Length: 181
Image 1 (tube, rainbow, N blue to C red):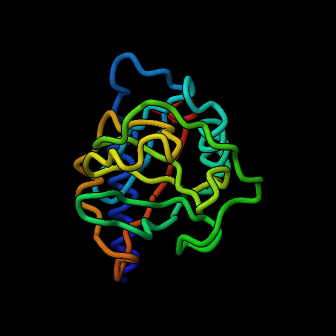
Image 2: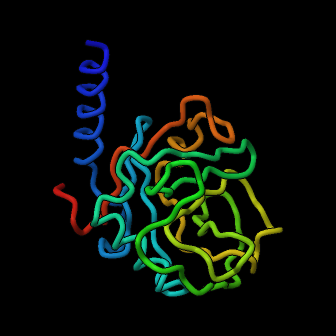
Image 3: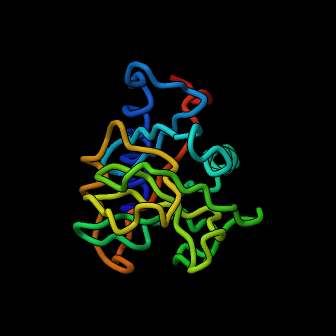
């Protein structure tokens, strides 16, 4: 019974956030809508500086790869990482090959979305992270793929841990152009 009530709550929250219009000036083809239990996060993709990475996130979102994927690494004052739709623990990727790095001069600051990778700069695949605070030590070392333009309050509410005891999950992630608004 508890699960049914929780599922109804999640569906109601998703219905409420799906009706919200996009912030002005965003290209729906290059905007992601990431729904959490705490609300919707709107991410402007930077296809101008990381076109391969932006296309990968859109492809995986369209395949529902990110739906129900946990935020498996959430470090207070640093970042929240997600996107392991293979294992859910930070060790997996997608069925697609890793991507070549697309480093830029865009600084890692609060709200920036970066691609997670191994020690190999050309190993980003499906995992990404959202910065809670500035992280200049990441500049030029990781690919900036986007920026949160609305909904950082939802990211701020994610449970902390590596991994969190009961991790928060992406309810649904989609390309704004595909959303039924």
